Length: 191
Image 1 (cartoon, rainbow, N blue to C red):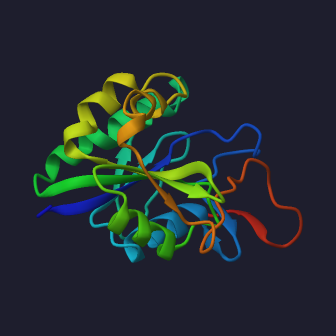
Image 2 (cartoon, rainbow, N blue to C red):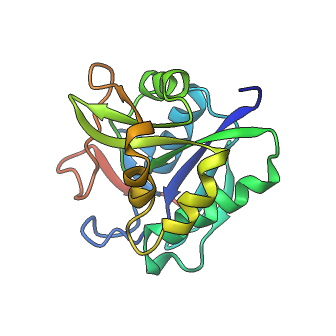
């Protein structure tokens, strides 16, 4: 591949179980959205796009994409993020991640970028998780299957034999943050 690998952070949801949008929530002194952008950048993704919706604000070092249809589910955010990549014709692949993965590390993203091929997914001790990587040749299929909260699930299933599983459990934690962390780690949200 001769082009770049972009990063796309899906961060548009309202965070019902979390108690509000996760993107601006501060965990360990940093907004989740800023941490997600930094992790993708440090892992080798450039440019990095962030899809926002329920909460919209400035995000340093990222191109913000606003999904006004965010309430329809993650699929609409994935479609918006992939569509925005049209502005970057030299991007060959996209690493798609979620805003609520505080245990994701740049080392895990770098491993996915380097070893994920045209269609790949991180695994944590053998369990498939996020982020995932898609070559441009897969984007139309990803967009076609991204409805409701399914995201890229159908596209990955239909190409299961081609998906490169990249183990990152030794350098990252793929647990998503569905509920607020008790104690001082979460300081609320920042504007």
